[in-house]
Amino acid sequence: MDTQSNNKRLAKNTLLLYLRMILIIIVGLYTSRVVLQTLGVDDYGIYNVVGGIVAMLAFLNSAMTAASQRFISYELGAGNLNELKQIFCTSVTIHFAIAGIILVLAETIGLWFLNTHMNIAADRMTAANWVYQCSILTFILTIISVPYNACIVAHERMKAFAYISIVETLLKLAIVYLLLILNSDKLIAYAILMLSVSFIIRVIYGIYCKRNFEECSYKFSFDRNSFKEMFAFAGWSVIGNLGFALKDQGSNVVLNIFCGTAINAARGVALQVNGIINNFSSNFIMALNPQITKQYAAGNIQESIQLVYAGCRYSFFLLSIISVPVMVNLDYLLSLWLGIVPPYTTEFLFLALIAALINSMATPLVTAMQATGRIRNFQIIICIVMTCELPLTYITLRLGYKPYMAMIPSIIVVTVGLFARFLLLKQLVKTYCLRYFTIHIFIKNILIVTGCILISIYIHEFWNNINFISFILTSLIAFILTIGGIYLFGMTSKEKSFINNKIKNFVTRNE
Image (cartoon, rainbow, N blue to C red):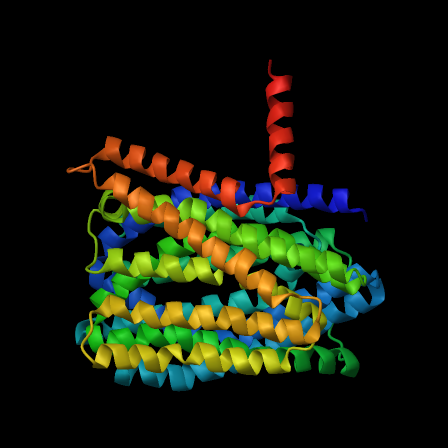
């Protein structure tokens, strides 16, 4: 398939994912506000930290998610239908096994930890256990959905994600309404309703895949070679994803032990906003990932490298376009959105956005590494790097620093992890250039966005009292500054020429 066709499909898929994201953001911002106000700060914190215990087991599932997407995309790129069917069936079988393992771990070690070590008020422990059980079932539904979702990504049917997300978003909107009118325990009701939505979406994805993809017809089979190859890939991924589980959810548990559920609520709100913003760039990467793998599988190494470089740059740029205006107006934005703002939410969110900007450059590198299939050293080293955040967070809080300072280790770890990934990838594919990545991608990206943030904050200081009008104006100025900075300093002459021609053609057609 020619490059022009690939680019058109990439652009179309990215656009569909962005339209999907806009809808999710609009509804998500509204529902988050209502849920926080309805549950209260402490119950909202309980929901985040208890769900985080289950999420700590996600490293098992994340490993197989990467394996499923890699092998399905690879076989599609190689054009081998019989092998593709075998890979799908093997993936489903493995995911059912993982679901069983996680269920056992969650109902033993996880349940013990929740009831003996978490900093939760005694009168809310019953509700916390309800949340925990619903979180386990929700997570199991997510696990068994992975092979089906991997097929949608590999086939680049992003329209399916867009339409199904509309259904999911409307269901979550309905949850907010029900939460307001129900007279039962709000936290328990919220957990049960979220579980119900997960079940409905799981059924929809399964029906779609069975009707549209020939390989998505499961029957139990055990192919030793496929199982061995996938499990070897996933086995090393387990190690890498364990590091991420300890990094993110482990730090949340440490915060709970030192600071209580109110701080978990602040971090939860910050990471939720960060996740919404981060999805702007991750949607682009979701559309790009299959092409990186397919180009590598087809032997087009240089094309794959160029896609990786482009992914590192543009995932950062797309995230910064949204992040900079938000960072400039955090206090006003959070008060406008939430009404009740948990303490330290502003600081948590600012630092989380910095970490997300740096980490956005890493995803294409991970995809490129997975495409090679040689991930043992990669996963071991990344696990070590990511796990370092947990002791660093513990030391930071133990020394008496403010709770939001627990995000500083995250920034350090994602920066080290970014370069560790690149160096490991370069060992396998020699044509990657560390100097080019460091100077023309990492340093240039950081300088552009730092300059935009500082100038935007300087302009923001001219307003003594921030109101809605000044909020809109300063956000618009920050947005324009970021777009301008990216265009002037972040794009190549070829990319500028392409954009200039598109603008000229648009103006000409509308004269």
